[in-house]
Image (cartoon, rainbow, N blue to C red; front, side):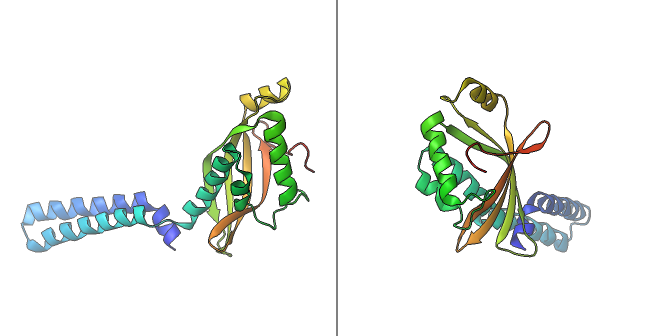
Length: 194
């Protein structure tokens, strides 16, 4: 409920601003105290709503924060922190969390993998299960020590990523993902994993 309320923050603020303009116009035309009270009440509601938007962290924001924290930890080569955001039930085409971690370590060691980043992150909370979410985003990584053809491909394009997340305690953890080449869109796999 709170997630959907604050995801519609801009439209709600626009409606409140329009209501304030109408009430202000009514006050200017009539000079009635009730119209002035309406302007003040609408203004207070808008300020409270805006303030709550900064104070309350929605579940969608928490999921997106988990995605960004994973990227930051990878870039610091802190795989312990990164894999804190990967569920023990993780499964990528039959590969578990330990195997994915080994592949991440290999990418760092072999290719100098760095500057992992995600943008256009979209979080969709599962309406049936409040502890599940889906995330889609664009992802890019630099591979300075990779063979030339791999390095050039990594530099020239990004991949689209679809991830499934599950809330475990207070932490949102990734349970699976798929990677897609952007043009033409087709699923791709990570070398060294099934």
